[in-house]
Amino acid sequence: MSNKKRSSPKAKLVLLFLLTIIVAIIAVGVGAVFISPVELFQSLVGNGDDGSVFIIMNYRLPRIVMALLVGAGLGVSGAILQGIIRNPLASPDVIGITKGAGLAAVIVVLLFPSAPIIMLPIAALAGAAIITIILYLFAYKKGVNSSTLALVGIALGAICQAGIQLLMVKFPVQINAALVWLTGSVWGKSWNDVVLLLPWIVILVPFSILLAKRLDVLNLGDDVAEGLGEPTERTRVILLAVAVALAGSSVAVVGSLGFLGLIAPHIARQLVGNKNQLLLPTSAVMGMLLLLLADALGRGVAPPVEIPAGIFTAVLGAPYFLYLLKKLKAK
Image 1 (cartoon, rainbow, N blue to C red):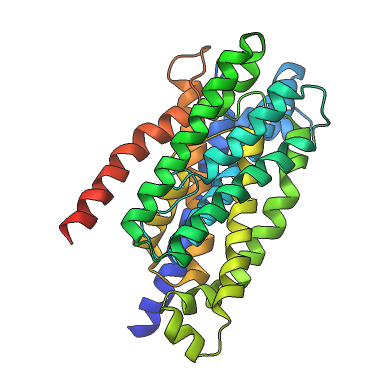
Image 2 (image 1 turned 90 degrees about the vertical axis):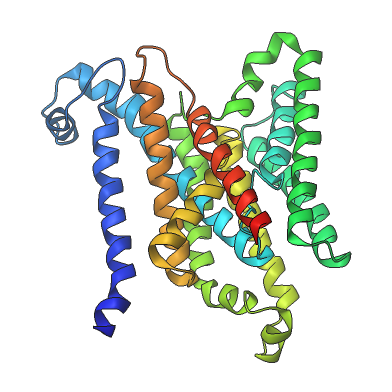
């Protein structure tokens, strides 16, 4: 019986991964032009008609892969932040990291339109890092409690959002280039965008899983962690850097996707528990699944009009955030 219980969370992770693959296959066919799984298979093996092959290879597959990468990045980033801050309300967007990255990216898009494409993720990472440093100072240098930390993050996010809106007013001609940061979407993403984001996710997500045991030790509290020989400050800084890099690189490519980094870790925690060796990969897969569903809904609700995926994640995430606030207040 005990062996069965220990294997259950791993089985849930495997089933969740298989479900994500199935949803990804179905999602390829959703849109103004419906493509069945059979047509998808035929196109991938070289037997599909030219029209389907063109749509799949140039439009559908890049955005599906992008949704998988971004979902994994934001899911793991949210799980790391909730772990090191020990706050269930922590996530890249709720505590302002996503907004900081978005503001920096919008500055590059509007003020330096001819800048190389590589400057976008660099700027987003810089913006996310600045917000993180401010939060770190509030959290660990001045003894701010977890609820206050969430409020500070919301305030910083509001300031960054105000900066984005100011830039949009100042540069109305280029406003369309910045609108993506207000909602978040994988619409129009190409293989070039995938290549830009791929190294960040492929390297940092496995690296974060390697640090999972250290994150478990941090969750015991600084005194206990130091008693076990864990260099708490160094470990926390490394994990923060990983979370910021994952969130900043994701936001740089698809814009500000609200609440995805909040919801995915919470659902994952309900499935596999609090051990980060399973929680982090499950958060990654759950983030993939949620973003795939949000993007598929955006394409399928009213084709050929597409609704940004960020609207669906916000509609789902905002009530969940209020529920968590009420739950914490009740404690």
